[in-house]
Structure formats: C-alpha cells, structure tokens
Image (cartoon, rainbow, N blue to C red; front, side):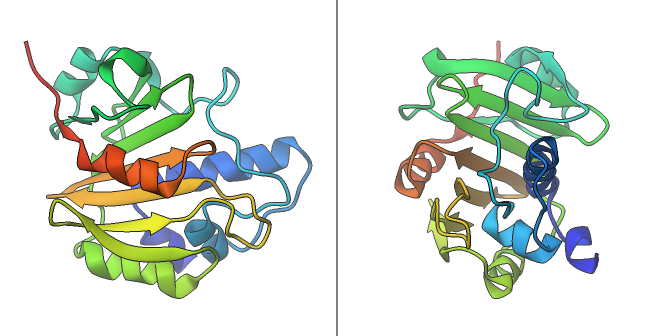
Length: 197
C-alpha cells in the first residue's frame, strides 16, 4: 500500500482503469506494485477510455479552454500526429484532484496531466523501474526527466505503451494501446502550453 501512496495522480488513474477493466471482465489483478510499473497487469489488456469507462474517473467532460481556467497549472497540448488539435476528441476535468485528460485520435492516444505529486522525478521514475514488470527505461524530453514503458512487455504482454514526463512540475502521462512508445516520445517532445484567447 505504501507504493500506491507514491504514485502520481495520472498513474493512479491508469491503475484504476486497469483494475476496473479487469473486474468488469471477471479477471484477477496483480499486486499493486507490479500493476504500477507494468501499466496494470491482468490477464486481459487494460482498457482505454470507452463511453462506459471515462478517461478520468470523477471527471466531467468539458472544453480545453474551460479546463485551462479550472486547473492550477498550464495545460500542455501536443502537435504531432496522431495527437494534434485536429484529432482532439474529448477533454476531461477533475476539479477536486486538479487533473485534466485529453483523448486523441478516437481514443487511441490518451494524455493525463496534473501537478507532480513527487519531489524528485528521477527518483520516482527509477522506483517504477526498480519495481519491474515491463520493459522500462529512464529518458529525457527536451531536458525534462521521463520514463518510457514499451507496450506489450509485461508478464501478460498486455500493457499499453506509456510515456510519463515531468515538465517542470507538471506530470504528463501519455498512453496508447495502438502506438509505440517511440510515437509517444515524439508526441511528448511536441508538448507546449496551450494557446490562450
């Protein structure tokens, strides 16, 4: 349980989605520490957002502008296919947890952002690697610390590709069941503060 306390809100959302997906399918779920680093290990692949499973539990559907005024941080938006302004689907806002989630390309790329809940990104990302569970590596994007997790490399070959980066105190997690971690890295490199007005 102590491991769960160290997880960032986007990581907890991802684990929650994996657990909900497994429970809905009548499947057991692995130990939380393994689920955290493997992106949620179950005998079935974790489920991305669907009409019945929102990307941000406890969140409300909103606009990018409305979300931008509601959260305490600058929302970062990508501009690299398949995640561009033209492919943005839904925007989710969880006011209580100060989180925003963006669905791109018909839910093939999901991005969850929040203020970082850890003090040291490198230490936090290293703790995920130390827990094991999937093919993970430390990296950087534009000088910011990040972790890259290859898709389909957990014990069940079912985890999504996952790229998490700390952009100066804003934790950004990018997930995809369809695209490789290399594509997610390119998407992360294109992140910029959303234009206002």
